[in-house]
Image (tube, rainbow, N blue to C red; front, side, top):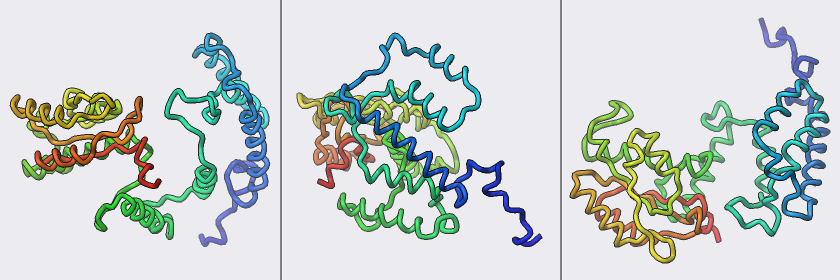
Length: 297
């Protein structure tokens, strides 16, 4: 069978939800309806005008969701508006200061539309062509903004928790190979890993402990370090914690410093922590999910 003989299904009634040239008018129409719905949400004057929290519970939401089967797009948006949008927290409201959530910048929204609709997979040239090189160049630029050496590299992640996971994975495997000659990726677990210890401030993100557990080291592998009056990791306390771990026969392998803690926005003293990490031959990871962007200011 040649390419000319393959039946063209795109645009048929069975495939009218697939994004293609024939369905683009539908996408435009549906997008406009979504934007109109969101615009009304942004037009709210009050911070929150949804149902009382006592009226929003799992069982009622579950009943509403299970009570519907097939809906038209217009019906689905109206239903979503009542179920979700009308009860959503308005992070864009200037009175919102409760958590880290913030308004989304317009370029990010537009970029998301482009990335989602074209749906490129950038891991290989044959799936993305120029996008693969664009990703590499953007990563090089980010590295240069942090004054990293030209040999530096990186990847984009889903967020801070995944970034912390990857950093601790590399810290564990790097220490195992350099100090014990064990390639964990190839050879798997070995007994000394149970002695590995990771240090972070007692105000660090919870994902440090979660990721230590996922990596097979457990919550107890993470040693919380006391903070000072500005909620920053105390370098002196870090040294004491490292020495205590060594005296107990365990192995200090990494320090996680934080650029902007979740609850206080505090920055750990990186210069001092970096020196301590070097002195003890430990991996240093900086969690910049919150404050890393300040390097661009």
